[in-house]
Amino acid sequence: MNTAVVTVGDELLAGRTTDTNATWLCEQLATRGVTVERVTTVPDRVGDIARVVNEYRAEYDAVIVTGGLGPTHDDVTMDGVAAALGTDLTEHEDADAWLEKQGYSHADLTEGTTELPAGARPLHNEVGVAPGAALEGVYVLPGVPDEMRAMFETIESEFVGTPTHRAVVVADEPESALLDRLERLREEFDVSVGSYPGESVRVEIENVNETTVREAASWLRNRVETTDDGR
Image 1 (cartoon, helix red, strand yellow):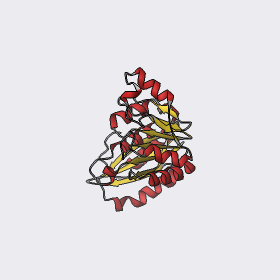
Image 2 (cartoon, helix red, strand yellow; image 1 turned 135 degrees about the horizontal axis):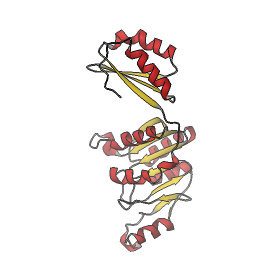
Image 3 (cartoon, helix red, strand yellow; image 1 turned 90 degrees about the vertical axis):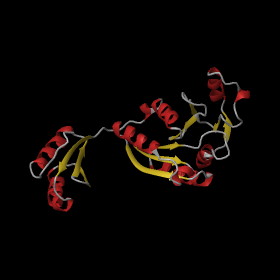
Image 4 (cartoon, one colour; image 1 turned 120 degrees about the vertical axis):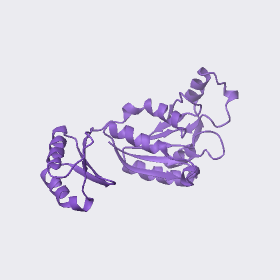
């Protein structure tokens, strides 16, 4: 399963808010063996949201959109998603009924709170008020981190892939000096290899087969100067 993550918000693009949602979602999806192919941030504009969601839903198994939910003037994510899916926003009776059970009467809610794309399945907000939605492989979640995480946990079983195994070898050599051995590593083993320089070079080795990863990591450790972190 492959996915794209779209985060919405002018404040993210201005650097006023750190996008922790995308990082957290990528971690959760990777743990479930789901590949994240794109992470994109778009402004609070219906056209931008619709264009990106429409493009990604054609390319990937699922698109997760966070941010911009609610009834205020700049909460336009549902409008953008509805436009991408070629549908309209409608008052969702199930979302209304669920909120009433939580103690919110329809009169208490700001107009538009429970408007979702027609035909969408509501995703109830256990932590806040504004509901999310799921339709045609597009999942719309809140931008508030606590609300987003709680809502994702209610749908995480819908994201299934092949878990990968990972080993880390920390080499006390310049990255440029490792190039020949990293190339040989890829030739000897069917693994993905990433190298990340800093004070040392972290070499990350990944494959769906745990034995292959373990053997590849052992092979590399025997050929570099290492300060292995044991993971």
